[in-house]
Structures are given as C-alpha cells and as structure tokens.
Length: 325
Image (spheres, one colour):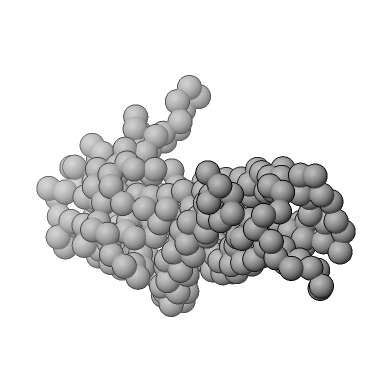
C-alpha cells in the first residue's frame, strides 16, 4: 500500500511540479483526490456527447443498407407512383406511349390506372441513401385518403457501395416495360442534369462521413481516457479529435443539405407535369446536424477541462498542507 501511495504521488508531481526551491518528496502527506474526482465527473459530459454523435453518424452511414432498416432516414425520396399519368391517359387517342406499348398493355393500363407505376413495371418510390438506394410500394396505395396516409413498403435495396451516387434515370429505365423509354414519359433532362451536378459532391460527402466517424470513434476512446486521467495532455488531444470530427461532419452535413435541396427543387419544379415528386429526408438531416452540434459541444467541453486543469494546477491541496503558487 505504501508503494502505491508513493507511485500516485510521483504521478501527481509530474502534473503539479513543486515551486522553485522545494524538493520533490515522496514522503509528503497523502494527496487529496477531491479535485481529481471532480475532473472525472465533468469529463463524463463530453464523453456522452461523443458517444451519441458516434451512434448518430453510424446510423447516417448505414441507414437503408438493408431492406427497411431505418428507411425513414433517407437523403431524399423520389415518388414515381404517378409517373406518366398524362401519357397513360386513355381518353387521349394521341398518346404516343399507348401506341408504342400495344393493345395488350393498353388493357393493363386501363385496369391499373390508379397505380400507374405498377402499370409501367416500376416501383412507387426510390429512396436515396449514403451507401445504396431502396425501392418499394406505398401501402395501402399511392394516394392518401381522409383516414390513411400511404406508408413505405420496401421490397428491395441495391448492394452497398462505397462512393455511391444515386442515378434515378438509370434505376427507372432499367425497370420499365420493354418498348417503353423515359423519352416516352417525357422525362425532363433538367432532373438528370441536377443529379449529375451533385455526383462529385455526393462522393466527397461519403469520404467526409468516413473521416467523421473515424475521428468520432477515436474521440470516444480518448474521452474514456480523459475520464480516468488528470492532466493537460488528455483535454488537448480530445479537443483536437473532437474538432477534426466536427470539421468533417460539419462539411458533410452542409454538402448533404445542398444536395438534398438541389435535387428536390429540380424534381418538384420540372417533374410535376409528368407525375413525379421528391421529398427531403428530414430525419437524416436531423441526425447529421445533431451529431455535428454534439461534437461542437464536446470540443468546447474539452477546452473547459483544460482551463479547469490549469486553475487546479495553480492551487492544489494536500491533506495537512495547502499551498498556492
């Protein structure tokens, strides 16, 4: 027990050196750990902030990676349940689309005019995520009524891919019935232009989220160390890690906000005439910005820990002896 006390005192003097003229003595009275325990308690706050931010960042990255897994946390959703409604209007004899798909499909279209997407062999919605996209149908139907709002029923998702970029034109064209093209449905080229315009940004966003989750994970490990240590190194190192995570997550969150706004605006502006619309992923936005704010709070908290340590360094207490330097 005596050796343990000497070891603890030696560690303490590494952080709290004696004033000039006073020699280090391991036979000094035992330390009072009140201040050390206070730091451990206050360091729990940035630890909890970092832990929650780490979980939220992981959810942002892996949302939608499996069918129905946090599907509501999509970046944006493309609603195609009414795509081509004007072209499929059987009351118009001049419909070029009906002429191209033949009489057999005309009958099918007439039967399914309430759900145009199924008539075209495509899905009701396509939701973009960070690693892939998911597709499915609205239940009980694509059109809301007075008592029930449609819910997403995911049928399948694409494979998870690093640096993924969702191309709705390619996804929909691949599923259309043979003999039908997006040109028949008067698919606006401005939508495709908007999607291509954010391709580089979406890939940069993925890299930033990877950096952010890595930095947040390291900050979480550092926070655990900070809870059980008393010194200048831990707060400074943890502040650096938290600041790096904050920078990466902040830029990634800003990019995804711009992408979301740009694509949704262009789809709703130019797609209304052919029956398509888009909606922002507000849940994803909430999670990514919450993680960013939490890392900002953690970074500030570690600065507080450093300042508090400096104050304790100028006034430390021994049992039976008190000095101020």
